[in-house]
Length: 402
Image (cartoon, rainbow, N blue to C red; front, side, top):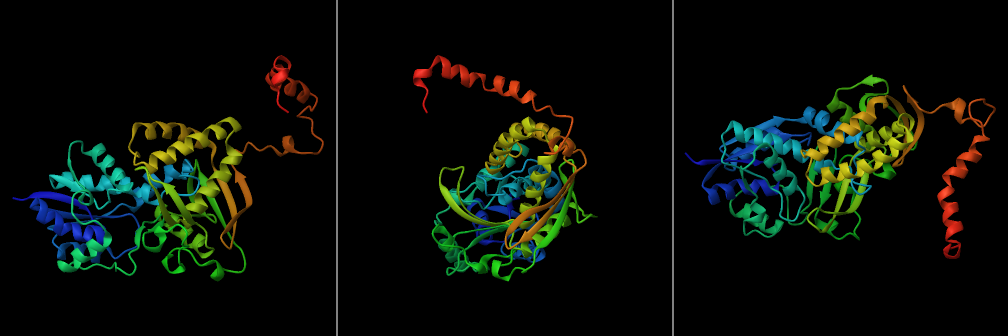
């Protein structure tokens, strides 16, 4: 009996050529595992392609709901954005995909697991740390770090030589990754950061010049930080995200063009579409302005940055991420309410805010007459608050810079 290798199979260029390479190199049976995270592709056809190109078996695993409830929802509660722009679509999907690969490997009593990530990218880290979290000691094969193929053109030539069907061409070697949260694009002309993305690559968002000439409105409701309703209607987790993708995409919401700092030390250029995710995190943060006290809100902003870095760096299943969830979940106790948004030509504005346990007290905040806040107390507060500055000026007056 041959050894078994479970390959995280997408049907793209990389994994398409890897089935034969793994079989030939390791004399192993290759089991293709196709994890459905909402990539909106013909998965039965991809399964058929895997089998026709040499896989001994192929699985299609529906992980969409788990992806949303177990990974996207916590990321929303943490307002997870890497380097102020990237909503972590690829980074969020990798942990659930890798977890499912391990489940298949255990079911099949496989000798090894494999993935199609390059040796230059972040995904190799995300896959392999998750593999190790759920199957310590399992053999991990990363063909890009082993084979003699050095470029996508080499892969295309290899595929043609061995009659492996592929959809990528030398003329347009885009690399694209999709799931229900986003689509990313890299490679080709995008490798030059001075080149703008062409309109033909975008799939989720309408070009600005073709968006409606009148604003659109959407109200998103949350319960303890988790989105539940759109315009008053309850949606299941997957359809909630997909519906907001359509609403946001119609108004060209959620495009991002970023030169980011990869974990492996280089900068890379990525173009992303995340229409529904952009609406969700925007609305969620606006609700937090109403529902979270000042000190917690400010400290949470620091935690959010670290949380996003953990996701980007492949540390979703790390002790620190679990620990930070304890803090973040506590902050969400009163994040219940709704935010109404106005969408127009790629822009988002707040049209209305409601929170069940809002800390905004109109009677206290008013500039009109009220009997709660005694303005005379401000003098003593300012005196004590500014005391260190005053003392510094008195005792070090010759060094004070003006």
